[in-house]
Image (tube, rainbow, N blue to C red; front, top):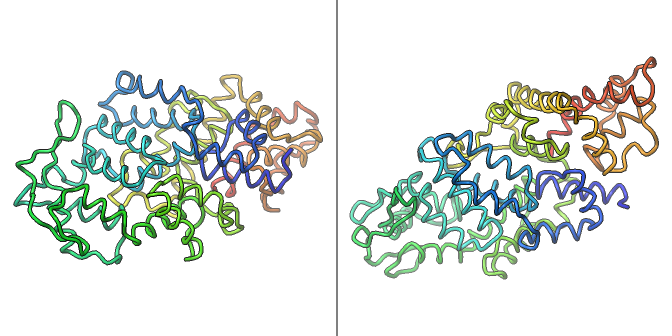
Length: 449
C-alpha cells in the first residue's frame, strides 16, 4: 500500500512519462512502486504490446489516407490504449521537436510513416534518429530536401537541423556551416509511388566541405556524426528533454548528469530520459503540477483515467483542434510553443466542453457509474464512506488527482456542489457524480501535469 507521498510521486511519474493510468494499470503500477514502474516505462520492449502490432498491420488498410482527421484519430487511439506509455509520450515529443506539418507535405500517408519512424526511435539512439528523419519523405518535402541538389543547394534542412533539432541558436555554428551542411545533404529525392527516399548520386555534391572545423568529402551521415559529438548538441537536447519532463528552468547542475549520460551511452535517448526520471529534480516541488497539459495530454489522460472508449468522445475530437493542437499540423517548424499559450478563454471552453461530452456520453452508454467506481476502487478512495458531501468530494478528487490536495477554494466549491440534505447515501452520490466529475476535470489543478 502506497503512502500519500508515494502515491503523489507515482501519479506524477505516470502523468509526465505517459498519459495517466487506467484503473487496472494504476493497481499494477502501485504494486511495482515508483522505481519498478520507472524501469518498466523505460523498457517498453519488455512489455507485450499486441496493440502496436495490430495498429501497425491495419494502418495501411484502415486509415483513410485522404483524411488527416482519420490519421489523428488513429494516433489518439494508440495513445489511449497503449501498454507502452513512455514510448508513445516520446513519439509525441519528437513530433513537436521535428515539427512537420501536413499542410505543406499534403500526404497523410507520409505523415503516418514519419510517426512510425519517430516511435521506432523514440527511446533509441539519437544519431540513428537523425539519420532516419533526414531521409524521411515527409521531412524531405517539409524542409525542401527534394529541391536540394548539386550546384543549387537548398539550406532549409541544413539550417533547421542545427538551429532547431540539435545544437540551438548561438551554439557556435556559422552561415558557412549551414551552407556546407546543405551541400552534404544534396541528392535525396522521394519516390512518390513507393513512398520512400531515394539517393540520386548525380544530384549530390561530392566535393570537399568544411563543417564545424572539420574538413572532408562529407555526405549527410558525416555531418550528423560531427553534430552528435558536439557538447552543444548534448546540452541542447538534454535541456529540451528536461523542460518536457520536469520544468522550464534547468540549472547547469541539473544538466550535467544528463549530458554525461548522453555521451557515456553513445547518444542513447533512453539513458538521458532515465537519468531525468530518476533525478531529484523530477520529483521536486518546482516540478510537481508545474506544467500545463497540452490538449493531447488533457484529452488522452482524461479518457485513460476514466477508461473511456473512443466512442465516448465521438463527435468531440474537433475539440482537440479547438484547444490549440492539431496533430500532424504543428503551426511551423518550431512546433507548438506550449506552456501558457495552451490556455485562453476559447481553449479552456473547448476543454470543459470535451470533458462534459465524454461524461454525458458515458452516461448515455450506461457505463458512467461503473467507470467512476472503478477509479475509486483502484485508488482506495471512498473507503471511509460516501455518505457526506465532504467524503464524496474528497474521494472523487483523490481518485482523479492522487496525492495532490485541492486548494481550499476548490474543495469548498466541490463540497458546496455535493451538499444536498434531501438526498443522502449512494443515490445522492450517483445523482451528483456527473456534475462533480465535470467540475473536477475543469478545475485549474486538473489542467496541470
